[in-house]
Length: 384
View 1 (cartoon, rainbow, N blue to C red):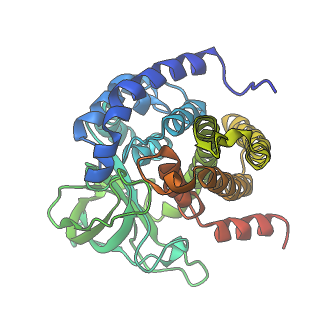
View 2 (cartoon, helix red, strand yellow; view 1 turned 180 degrees about the vertical axis):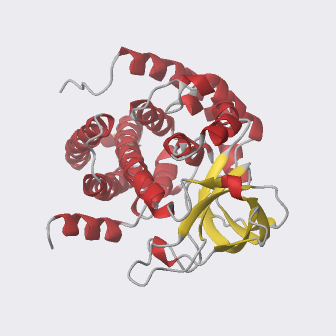
């Protein structure tokens, strides 16, 4: 079936990006995974390529493009090559927040460097005791007596891109919970990552996304100027609710891209690998398994493309994004598992891209809200 979601500009960008990945990423990606992060100068290269400009107005150096389709091209091309851009993924998810919820002064201060990769950003929401239940966060910021700054204290887990970020959006409590609203009193503070009192207290070794620079951050009596509140005092949940549909769309698109890449890798492998004197591709089981996988990837593509079109039209609701993430995450996992099985023992080796896809894609059912939370959102939208 003819795919209509992308136009000539997207395909031209795809061609440039594919060459960039082949030259700048694929040859060194294993080194990045071993190091747990990409080199800091790589972010500057992404900035030069224009990747950080999507969603940022031209007056601040951006591309002025507000849709998500260029981001989808990035996901597809990274999956096709079996690589990631490390902690840049978190940075690329934040333009809408920085554009919509910052003041003019903040835009002028942050966005130009955001676009070039000189200022890398991350977002810190999850805590050791508060994951999908965002309203359960306990990190708190208290206004100073002279009213010039907040004093921030708390711990944040799973901060993607955290170790190399320059500015971190921290969700915290700036006042107590409302009696009838656990989400009340939450604010977003833009915290300088190298400010006194900010520390990286753990760098866990993750199952997948090994170069994504995922860390635990501790904030101890960190002074944050009142001019660095993002989105208005007490308005964090509104800002975050705006982020979630795009984040979940991105995860859904990424899961589809992983599944499509897995089928490609498996198809290439079974044509080359011989068993009992003939290619693995010659066995009926192989053909049937890959046919099933191809059919599921076609369905994944339809869901992802429909969600992309809805998002760019400003029509993707929170429950639709949750549904797309749920379906794409679960279905992609099934497809990738079958494709890994066709690799036999080599599918268990991390130097093979199918193994990295398997590990990386596992996060799609956890990050951005677990599959169980997605089911709750979809069920609620059904009146259940």
